[in-house]
Image 1 (tube, rainbow, N blue to C red):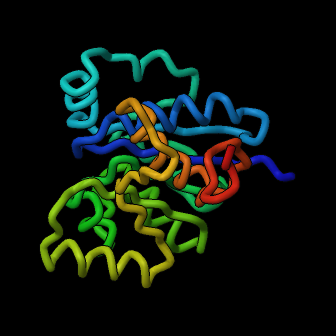
Image 2: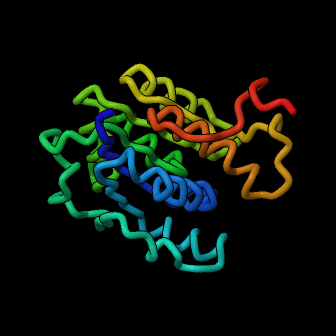
Length: 190
């Protein structure tokens, strides 16, 4: 199996727990991954500290890039990153991507992924959706992106907030094409 080159973008939308659990999962799946490049918006760092009560995003050994670092490898298609996961994806970020506005590394990397026909997964977290949000999701989907709302499932009978959030992250990992051991509908019956 070819190892994956993955971009993780973390925006300032509420839902830092999803980003944290994804980074934890990617650490555990390191044998399937060549590299992970991470870019966080300033608001993402602020929301992480507020929601999770720490700055643990700094503990991960992945390659971190500043939001305006257009010298990051994944700012160009020649770096051949396979997948970009935006988790959580703010509606502002989604709107900029939908309209081709590459004004920071997150939107530039998404533009590159889409133009190279690679996998973009946007984990949108806002609710409810306005018509503008829906149209932007439609545009990104038509361009080849995957909209994966942060809508947890409950058939695994999660008992903690992390287990609930992990149901979303497990779907994202599946969408990214990584092999994992997770709950599967009607496969994990006792």
